[in-house]
Amino acid sequence: MYMNPSRSWHQNYPEGVPSEIGPLSHASVADFLTECFGHFENRKAVEAMGTYFSYRELDRLSLNFAAYLQTLELEKGARVALMYPNVIEYLVAMIGTLRAGYVVVNINPLYTSRELESQLLDSGASVLVLMENFAATYEQIAEQVTLKKVLVSSPGELLGLKGVIVNWVARNIKHLIPEWSFPCIHLKEALKIGSQHQFVQPQIGLNDIAFLQYTGGTTGVSKAAVLLHRNILSNVLQIETWLRPGLKHQSHQQLQFLCALPMTHIFALTACALLGISQGALLVLVANPRDIDGFIKLLKKHPGINIFPGVNTLFHALVHRPEFKQVKLPNLMITIGGGMAVHKTTADHWQALTGVPIAQGYGLSETSPVVCVNSPLEKHFTGHIGVPMPSTDIVILDDDEVELPQGTPGEIAIKGPQVMACYWNKPEETRHSMTADGYFKSGDIGLITPEGFIQIVDRKKDMIVVAGFKVFPNDVEDVLTGMPGIRECGVIGAPHRKLGEIVKAYIVKDNHHLSESDVMQYCKEHLTSFKRPRRIIFVHQLPKSNVGKILRRELRNL
Image (cartoon, rainbow, N blue to C red; front, side, top):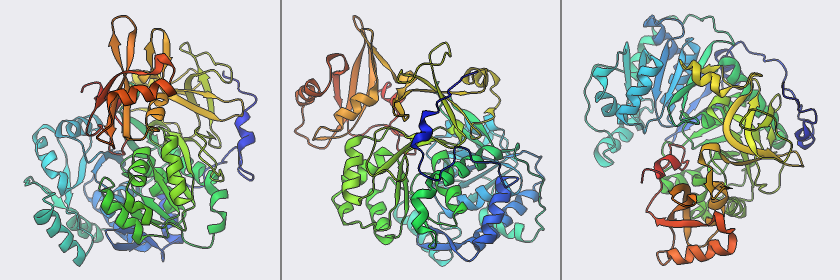
């Protein structure tokens, strides 16, 4: 049994934030959503491509989808796979699946046909719902998977007359929809069928599965975290409890949440969509945050945004666009950075332009996701990940699972109501990821500072050992991104005959005059010798995940 009697982080809790969240008041995520829809029925719920949907409409559409799924007579616990960017159709299908008592399998819409096939087979999905932009991807593997039904929607499926224009532009101007052909039903038709059938309230409990959330995890092998209704509801309550002091002045006005990160990713799913709905907020959906020009135009139309969750690469891309200086966000209250380390230079630039610091947090798919976050009352970027959420315990372990003293780096292990039940159909993976006391081993290296804050050092598997010295890529990347002329970078270890490994840096330049010798000289001035990159490679872009996280494992294949 790990003993951490000091819980030194509790001293850093904002006034009024309890150390425990207390019992849950809803029987399931579906029950929670139904209550929210009733309470906020007259409010605007979603803005998607310039079209607004009320909570009453979201309630009706998701119930129709749930009723349609029930006509398929799926078994209890059936999996429904969703392959969407941030569009209204995703919310309708996700919420409808939960209300029907089934399990949501979120699939990255950028996946290849091989990756899609792998997750459909592993999850045992009965139904696939996707936007037709990705239909050709499914068509390539349609004969290799057995599905009871495939539903397809156009980009403007639920946007009314505006949807006709959206679809025409997507097909004829932007050429976003490759040719495809396979048996399916269109989402609009499914909703019509559902509206003609009586929805039957299923029995759903806190220990039933809500989501299969796929993650590369610590091995790089795709596996699904089994997230129960209990896990998701606990994390929504934890985040809401934590952010409450930062939102107390907004209690009488409707909040606006920016949903730029993909909701098929656990960060945006919980911290944007579900948290936003819990507050009766307006969810402003960004279908393609990689289109920075289009994103900035959207921001100019929404000066009322209060909550802005993002990742370092997104913040970095925005602050380096001259047009972003024209964006006014006078109502912005909280900016949350997660998914990857936020670099200080980016955070400082963001605060200088918006007036709001980035509150860095930490989480994983396996923890629903939020584990730690900085206080919303912080005045400046701290560089650490804050403190554990209420009802969350953290210990720092060595390789033998022995607890390390405060200030000593080791593997972060987490216990709390948001921690997953297991990995789907992977008992050995589950066993290796948990301690005997039920702490989830994150695969991240961190420490507890003397002041009681949690400091992330790096991913355990990304650590570089140079002549016996440990080097963490985050440290090197943070220094490099502070150099004028470097837009972004990724650091990995490379084998070396004498030293074991050396530091290798992939760099995207802002200044075409920047040379390797310039970078080497800068590193000589800012890094100790064994941390300095021995190899510098200039590239046009870095491989990234769908949320913009730099993929170091793919850098190793370049």
